[in-house]
Image (tube, rainbow, N blue to C red; front, top):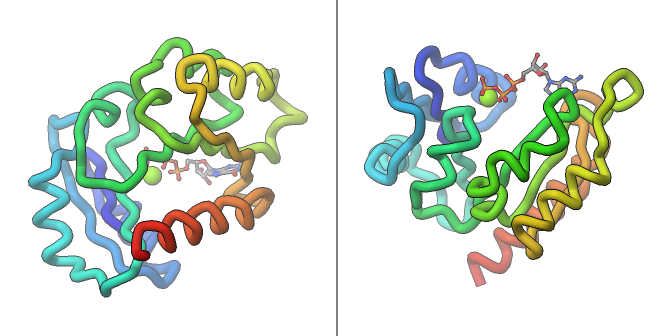
Length: 158
Ligand SMILES: Nc1nc2c(ncn2[C@@H]2O[C@H](COP(=O)(O)OP(=O)(O)OP(=O)(O)O)[C@@H](O)[C@H]2O)c(=O)[nH]1
Ligand SMILES: [Mg+2]
């Protein structure tokens, strides 16, 4: 896992404590990762052939959409604590993504989030986008997300 944040190694530390190899990139004033940063991180990470490398870009919905990091797919993660109209406000990210994960669905009873509308808006800007509803905290939908990853990894390594 390659983690991009302006500062701190918090996310890479968390991933390592969960048992996976991880490299943190700090972008300082930068608002996104670029291919050269990922290239260097891959040399440190030394992933085995056939393994999946996940890149968590700096957390905003604008510049990360614009840069090719050499990835097979972009996945956008939004949460039910945000506005359901994010796909309409930031269409570039949703057009660039193959999959949208809607996270924190365990909070749906407590927030006013129009989840069907959010998926409709995402498909309006990108008719090919796949949508999965998950809770990283409770585990809901994680089996489908893992299945998506396994399927795409298999296709990429055929
Ligand atoms: N209730 C709930 N909280 C969650 C869930 N997933 C993450 N959180 C919480 O949301 C907060 C932010 O999680 P992060 O993983 O740091 O979010 P992030 O979007 O990766 O943030 P950056 O890496 O800083 O951009 C933490 O307090 C998590 O515990 C979930 O499925 N349900
Ligand atoms: Mg993070």
